[in-house]
Image (cartoon, rainbow, N blue to C red; front, side, top):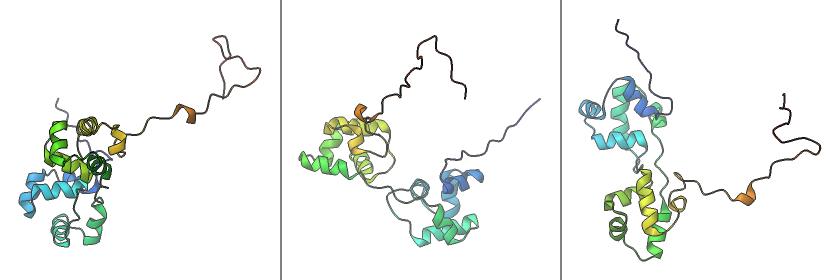
Length: 172
């Protein structure tokens, strides 16, 4: 007996990508159908560094059968630039090319990271090592700063209560 299971796209997928997935289209197939470049489609779905033109949005709206306003709401906003990379780099007198060489990544990858575009966590770690800073300093969107132990409240100890192995469990 052959059993086919259909699984819907995950809930955390950007809405524009979800539209494409629901129609079982690859980026290449959508590109061929609309005449838009695959790079443009990818950036629209992920919130790349540029704001799309109305003509581009109109092409996709017609393809999906949506209004321009409906489609515009589905396009994620461009990412916030990671200005700390450039600021730290400039403070150290380091060019983007030199940073790329020290980190072992391409110059284009450095530019993508600076613009806030999606890059692998490993790339941010390499850039942080090359800049000699903690990763959360250059990419607070990916890394959280360590918690200061002084900011964590100590556990509350109730007088007269037993806390050892022999203590009775709480019943709530």
